[in-house]
Image (cartoon, rainbow, N blue to C red):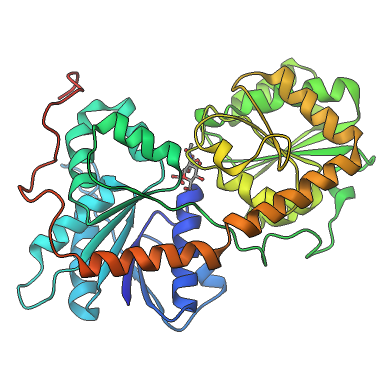
Length: 397
Ligand code: GMT
């Protein structure tokens, strides 16, 4: 098949998933065209013959209130389809990417066969509407008009149905991880660089958005450090970084917290650490937790969103109520005090990754979905509307 992939390749888990999906599809013989504002990092370092990149150049004019990315993307999709004859355009995020894909399809020259639009929701579409209800009709339109919609967890599917009153079918296809890249012991771990006095290493990796609750990470760490020598390694950057470092100062632990900023090779840190912390308000999936599990690193996380679909409490990691930093700290101390239990959790975690989250089992689910939409011809919402009979979001519309 000829497949276009539209994503934000540099931001967070959705970009990683979209890039890895394209890479594995190409390795399975498909022709893959990434359409985005920048070349996905992994492709720059690991080029594959049947992967192509089409750069979307955004224009910004002083007289216009915002940039024209959505329009520029639509134009680029038209050009790529007309030059390459794509069967599918798979967009990651309903808003704005699915909207751009529909725009492209409508403006495609009649001589070209119209492509199908597959939309994967990663969660931000739902939270966007939660925060800015004025997006509701257009997000609902994007979901209802796509030829197929997938979510990365059952939780996100349920949320989507609840928020939008969606009646159309939605496929749940979980995220996956490349276990050849994410594995313990692949490269020698330099623990001493992170923990010079042989301390335990707690690790957190995220984009430091409020939903990640990075101040909880510091609170958990401070409680752990009262009882055992430890350092906290914080990888990533984002709006809550200052609050996290302030909380570390307030709690008197800033000397043991290392903010390393954004890193590409996170598997190196995951292979070195003793515990991974993810106390998020919710995660629609929690890709970072899955990557840690592949590295046999015990995860202590909140039970928010789709995390219980990834981590089985007590067997492949630990879950606690969101905000319960005392319980999360106790779980960390339990892991640090019982190396055999920690090793067993790590082994079971990697086994669970092998059972449920390997590219070899997840990529065929996308392939079957693509084949299905190529067979189906009927549009989901034939009236061309957004499929919502009655708006539930009165404010802001
Ligand atoms: O977590 C983020 O802030 C980034 C966001 C994204 O759009 O990349 O991540 C979301 O999608 C990931 C890939 O499917 C999921 O693993 C993350 O759980 C999800 N983030 C949230 O739900 C907060």
